[in-house]
Length: 300
Image 1 (cartoon, helix red, strand yellow):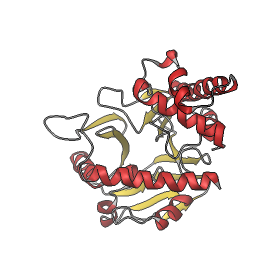
Image 2 (cartoon, rainbow, N blue to C red):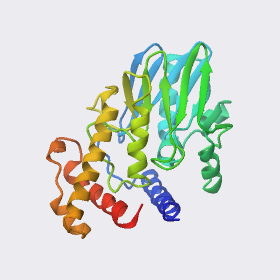
Image 3 (spheres, rainbow, N blue to C red):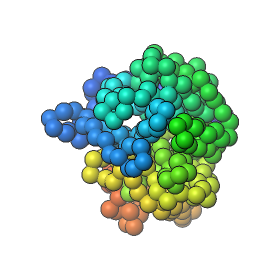
Image 4 (tube, one colour):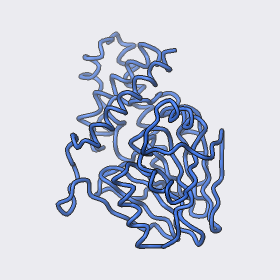
């Protein structure tokens, strides 16, 4: 029951965030060329590209028979991405894969739907989008439970579901030929967890990362990062993210076991100097700490 209420509350928070973002109420942290929310495209190789809009990233794969897009982000970003795709190929976008249900990653796919693309997502996304419909977020045409393989033009993307971690519909995408993972939200290299960890279950997050570490991959593309961060990272960033979460939970629990039960005091007393150089350490670590306090104090 508590997890259900937590999911509902964070959906509301996500929708408020999205409304503010689209209304232009968030500051632009990465102006590029005088434009708000700068974009860029980086070719990784063999038809695989990383598209960046502001602090968001996604991927698209160009094949001889068409294009596969992962996460259209939002209407503005999707339009810019389509322009970039057209510079590379005149082949149509055949498939759009949703990583999970959160609107800040998957809105804006309507223009690809109008071109005839097929949309793919975990089965829970269909229910969640049905409960919270959006005119810019087409419902998936193909859904699956544990795993699904997308094949086009001799290329393959494997989709794997690891249960609840960040929401309960997140999938990890693996390109077996390149041994590359595209991981959304649960791995953001060299950055502490996002603010108060909205829609994250800390224990399930750690479990999922342990299982992901068992996959066959050499590199990771993550869905967040500013322009000065690499578009692709070594596989070790998955373990680094897990170890941070384990260290965070252990530090909070140790302080609580010693008698500190006030979240305000925990925010001031718990420190993780090992991660001082990670992005958003000073701003977000106190919020991370309070989220873990809620996990131990309230059970979610």
